[in-house]
Image (tube, rainbow, N blue to C red; front, side, top):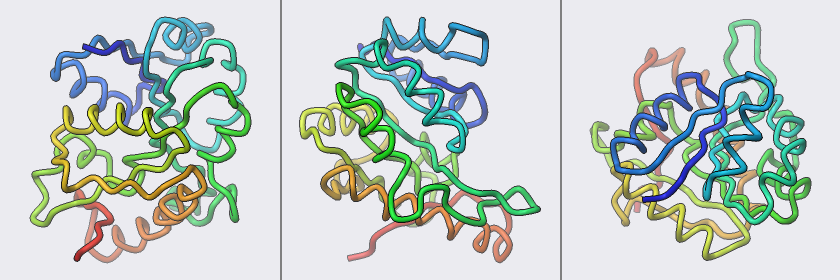
Length: 198
């Protein structure tokens, strides 16, 4: 059992918290109440950033002490939204939210994952008609191994998880969010994931 704090209680955070609790982890969800994120992060071994990506950097940089020596799993995408509320561009072109977080939190081990799919797939990958891929980006191999184990608890098979390398590789997976509005307009709002076919 791992103590996990989920920052953000929207669809993504709520979905992850429910699934991780079901898998036997001790999960705390931090809402926007003042101090809730700090309290949750302070007592957790793993912290999941499921806050809206546009404000994630400011929110998490303020938790530098609480996040010291913790694994921070970043599942958010920092996007500029279009008039329809769907992603229209990246806030950090040429970089990534994960890289910005790692730079702001040098004593925290940031791992990017689960950001290349619609939120229902994060906790139910086997429901898709084809095999999805969960990508890992991060500079700390041990932290990535721990996150890999958490992913298996969420139903991800080992063969479905691809380690892309260091945190800089997150700029590639974050850019994949730009597929989302076009796929939704083309196919409707159905669960999907970016996957690598061999």
